[in-house]
Amino acid sequence: MRTFIINTALCSALALSGAIGCTANVHDNTADVHDNNANIDDASLEVDSTTDMDQVTPGQAVHLELTAQDVFLIDPAQTPPTDRVKVAGHFEIFLDNTSSTALLVTAQESVDVTIPASTSMGDHKLLCRIDKHDGTATKATAEIAFTVVASASGG
Image (cartoon, rainbow, N blue to C red; front, side, top):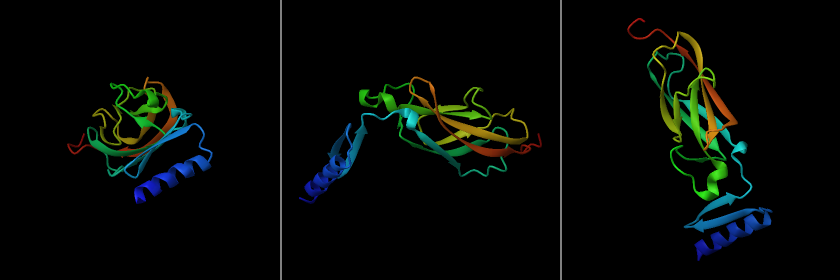
């Protein structure tokens, strides 16, 4: 009975909020809300790291935690469900600028990115961008700065 009341309250709240163009599927006290007007161009992205970004060496793997909003993350090699095509996307991670080749293309939110062995000492940044499923870039980007220091071998 409690589940029925919660489900009824959730559906009523959605209806009263003027959520026109939305559908709600309620399963086991969780709601999966699909906004039929959603668009990946409204996505946002944040990036954080547990790696010491002041002491990165060439060839080192840097751990990133990516947090995306308003995007259905899916591997670019897979086909998104038809109701998610407009919001389907993935991450592309670049070194210093987005005109370079991506270091990593993924739909995972917790990743390790290897800094190229040829990266010069000094200040750099990893640029993370959400791309649409078809590979088109969005405006949703985030960056994290890091400093490359001499490698452990002295190079």
